[in-house]
Length: 112
Image (cartoon, rainbow, N blue to C red):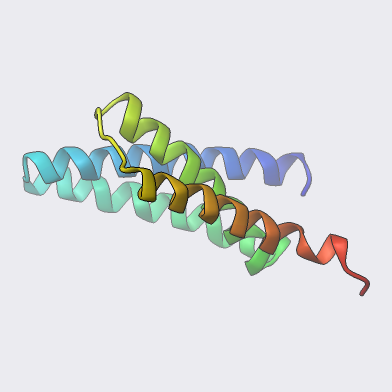
């Protein structure tokens, strides 16, 4: 992934974080304007992802995005919204990060 790809991945991550935060706010106090904001943010993030998929492939783009978002969204959920996890849920998140890392890095460890 080149500098442009990394920048687009960072921008999409920020947009998806804003979308997830807006979705949480909407869940706490639903309104049509909030729902429209959530839809607009997720749409913008997905449009950027389409570019990344075209440039770097489906597997790499979505795997990297998934693990970065998994970590970032959980940081926001815990730090900003005060959410808590049970031990089993925390282990599940760690295993999910490990799984995506293995999927993403797997081809580099095996002969082609």
